[in-house]
Image 1: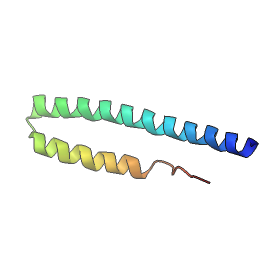
Image 2: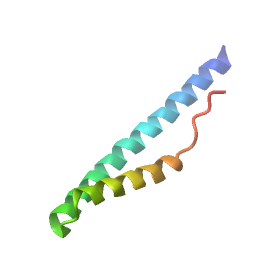
Image 3: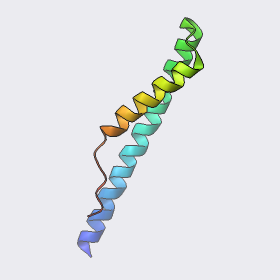
Image 4: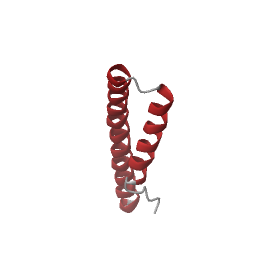
Length: 68
């Protein structure tokens, strides 16, 4: 029973890390996109593609969530 509780605690910590990184990354991407669009005039399509690539790079560097 103790192993299950420790595993659930670790899983909860992992998901909290993932959510925190996602929220911060979304905020930074939005701010960068607004600045680039407003000051430089970068098209929205390029901003969406850049945000997708950045999100993939961040997601690939997160530690994996282990089920066992």
